[in-house]
Length: 505
Image (cartoon, rainbow, N blue to C red; front, side, top):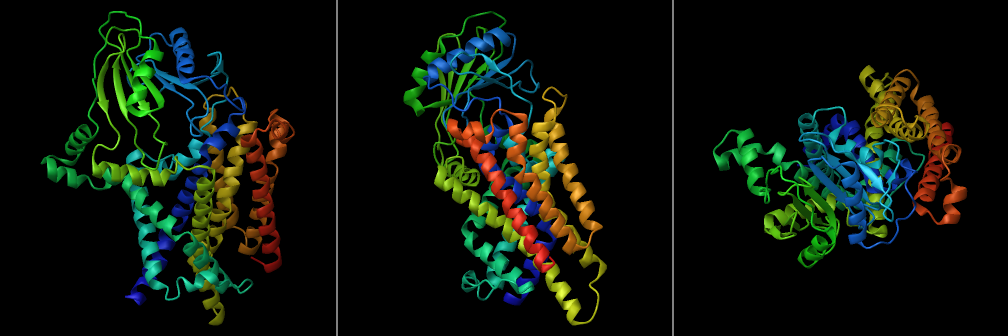
């Protein structure tokens, strides 16, 4: 079996390596999505006023009554933990309209003018939405890639005789063998995480890539069966239509008080048909309270506060198992130490894929050299484009952060322009790599990444008042941590560039 696994492991990596690398880099950034969000919205305050949730919710209701009175729906996001650190509201003017998000000062209820940006959530969502693709296409591609990753991991375990022994072996300066050692080290060190992340990623899209199971169970075509399945799994709770008769909302503090015994802290308040006699108030608990990505949901009558419906978290074992896999994948429950381990494991996953991509070309280049031949044109093209994939993506992410600071705050479609800058920069890196000798391209692009990240603290100081000179004395560790982290990345890429200059790669 082992001889058959090695070619399968190799070709799965070759065919899906660039896509998996993109998914891992952007997905790993997602473990710091809240911190990146905060840096990309420097207008937000460092800390929120420690008001009780009832007072914050009341301030949000007052704002919505003044600015979104005719809306079909209001949603209030309370700052319950690291994942939602600021009071935020949004509303939908009409059915099908995109929500209008607004950040509020928790103490006063006044809106905070915040630049339009996709922030850290934009990077996180890229790893499964693939941004420019339609959702169905993106889910299909991600499903295939996640399956390929799981297959590559399993075949890699079988194919390597000395899999765990190689964990303690690293021979620097040995060319192809050094890349193999680095690949083995990154793979073994993070193997439990990689197996978890690949399998749980498939759990995320299981309803999309296994539609025939629902079809067989319900005896309907896949589309109709899927809707029936979703309707049974996520049934509507006390749905109603607007009556057209105006009526005031019950004080929100009463609703939160009645919700507390049923599931603890409320994280989200959703109000349908506000100001109508048929208004409904839905409260949702904190999905990030534990590793099981689930929370209790309560529905109240909007005018009286009477409890109409309740859905408890963990009502069935299969659904709890699914929610556990989703929670482990996202890691929203993780504290600082566990989040650091998530981040380290994600970076090791990036290194595992990158070293595997380089190893494939290094093997073929070395084989051609021993035989006195020139490597085939396709192998040489992949070797060059590896540079654009591996170093071009960090360059593109640095460009994304630069665009956040340099694009005018009021420009139309600003958030989309930031994303466009990222992908244009990545395309430019691919083009540069395709027409440059690999040894030169590695060095130049490593220096570009070093400059892009290393200069971010200076860029931040030149464009905002939330620079290191202000954030460090104020104890604003999110802003300071981002700047210092970018500086550390810049130094790491500079060391890479100097090593590439010494070794010619």
